[in-house]
Length: 306
Ligand SMILES: Nc1nc2c(ncn2[C@@H]2O[C@H](COP(=O)(O)OP(=O)(O)OP(=O)(O)O)[C@@H](O)[C@H]2O)c(=O)[nH]1
Ligand SMILES: [Mg+2]
Image 1 (cartoon, rainbow, N blue to C red):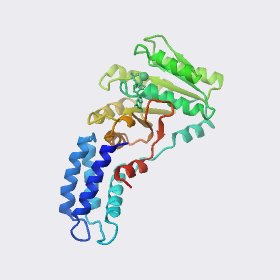
Image 2: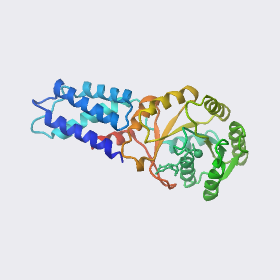
Image 3: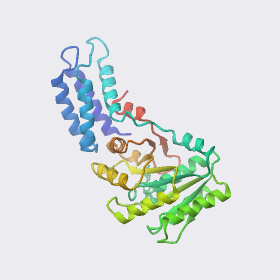
Image 4: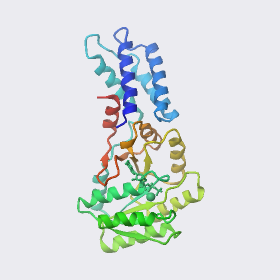
């Protein structure tokens, strides 16, 4: 995963190691190399503003780092880069979503999870993966087809429902998605089904009406978790999307999809930096099993090659 970004950091570490003149990293060599890294970050889809923050953190943390002449120079440099990168996203907690949801079930039922995000990024697929994951723990879900906008959306969810043996509650094409979500919650509550997973229509962040509709679904359904699903292929536009979405809805956590088919993965850093919300999972394929937990320490360690 993230081969391109990993190569970028690996090149950066190598150049730092060979640039050390004395026993510490100097301002001049760090400055030049960080500048080169900045360009590669932007080429790898890290948004400009985020690449700025990373560069600043690297500059501050790397200058003066002692690199013993006879010690493992590479390990020392890698550790410093790791710390610098982590500090950019340091205050965002890693959340074990499954554990949190299960803990919440002790207090309230059903637990309601809403999926939202732009068109075609993998909301419906990710929702089905999550239903599969909970079903494996013996926890059933009601699937709410609150995408009443796109032709075929309900059928797509019904297909998943059939395969997973789960009930889908939907409305007619064009029906009010908030009331579909509400009905699904009522249905789950009356039958003691522990989870409701709400699928919503993909929308461009610039479509004001659809964004207001999304906000209404959130007000009516009051989800315990609103999950922003984004495609890891996004580049600089990630920043604008994140800003618009946070204007209309609140976001508790995120899932990055299509990580399997894209070697850059810079948008993960962008969304973490802007939303400052945890990434719960990464989508790594099209099968139900292809959902893996995300841990920011592991992600950064992977980028730096520790
Ligand atoms: N390779 C890969 N493909 C994925 C992943 N997640 C979703 N997809 C594919 O991406 C395409 C779009 O997925 P959907 O789940 O329909 O996306 P959506 O966000 O619900 O789309 P709209 O409802 O139109 O907004 C499908 O072909 C999925 O199989 C992933 O993690 N890896
Ligand atoms: Mg969908």
